[in-house]
Length: 101
Image (cartoon, rainbow, N blue to C red):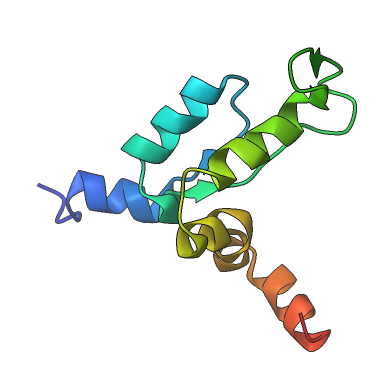
C-alpha cells in the first residue's frame, strides 16, 4: 500500500544480525537462515562475557568467530567479518582505505 519493496528484500538490505550467539547450533542456524550479506561479526563489549568454554578453553565470543568461519565459504566469511561492516560504516571504510587497508 505504501509502495515499499518486498518485505524480505527490504529487511535483508536494512537489518543486520550479530554473530554474538553463545551456542554453536545457534550460529549454525543463523548462517543457514539469514543471507550472509545481512550478518556482521559482533562481540560483546570488553568484559561483558567472562565465561570460558570448558571444552575449548576459549572465551565464548571467540568461539563464535571460529564457529561461523568454519561453516561458510571465503566470500561469505569476508562479508561477515569485514565487507558488511564497511558497507554500513562508510566513514570507517574511507579511513581504512586512506590507510591502504
